[in-house]
Image (cartoon, rainbow, N blue to C red):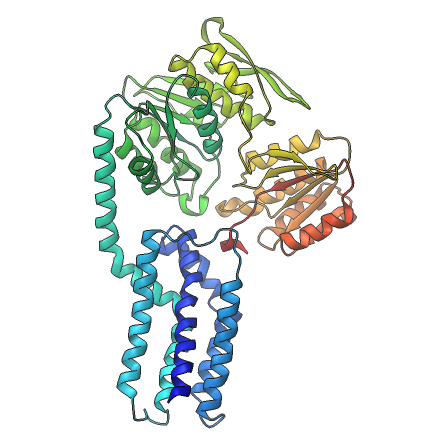
Length: 530
């Protein structure tokens, strides 16, 4: 009996730990069944689950092997998987929030409770040709195979609980905001550029005001609520709120909580098309911020993107800005010059307004994001000299076209966060200005572009092939499209490398890098796109 108790314990530990990966992927898919199922469906026949299927078959075929030996094999497999689970490293690990703890606990309770029930019901007698230990261990292997289903069952059971908890948090956040009637809220949204704009605006406004911004990627309704409940202080004067969206209504939900006075729309482009379906849906969702602004507020809109320029605004004064498409703009960035020390440009506005600025940041998108922040700062009365000082001291935002030098004389351009068509093209253009050595790009391409994914990654590959010296394509998700584009550019195929992961990419780099070379890391796909 002790022998099988040890087996049960090993299998129970494996069964419980196995849920961790399911939860991690469910979290990365925003706890949304449709997105999670789309990710899961092609992976149902993975080798990880097939090993459990083989163990289950061994247990259910007693004529092949004695149950004690079968259970021993299962225990060895389970111990091996426990070891692999504990050693597994992820780019974005499971964040153990209170919600995850609730979901994890209920999932484990359902699985272990079922195991105890099976063990008690079969104790001391067989079930047909199967012994009690075979049935109990077989149940645990079956749960390992269907771990995703057990987790989803727990999720469905917890839906009413989560909604009630979220309502309580939202109401508390609203109470806090009502207690601060003088707080001014600036919303920022866009297909890309919103995080950088948030940082730049906060830096500039901090010269004149006490400012709080949503930290990290807290740009969901509950992320904003958490920011208000945990970080907002009575002495804060301005709340800079980043607003993300993956489906229609997401921005409106945040606006209904924070009631922004001013808002910035940084861009409308083909991001998250798998959920939005059309660019029109992306545009209408981003402009939920503008639609929510009061008549005495202010909307700042980037006219460099056609959907933004074509969208009329009647409910609130709108200030439009641009660098490329300057017609109809209230503010433009003119005389943009890139140097080894950074970027110089002039903000030109109404009534002959001019403000010369310099920044250590590179790239047209950074100039555009700074321009949007400057407009809000001017609107809030920040003096020009304070704006100039703040812009000059803006630090690079990590993983967003940030540049550093290695001791070996290699320049690294880190643009690994959330690559998009406009940003990736601009990053390639920035790299193309480096002339001292080889210009190398390491990229897995772009994701969540719906039906346009192949075409946009192909165009990206073609542009990289035309501008750069070495292209390293990582992974299989976009490999075909990028390679097709690179080859169409007439690129030297000897300098095109196809690798399975970033570790292999590092090996290629180690063999070709020399002092003076520049490496651009463009995008870094999450674990859901391995």
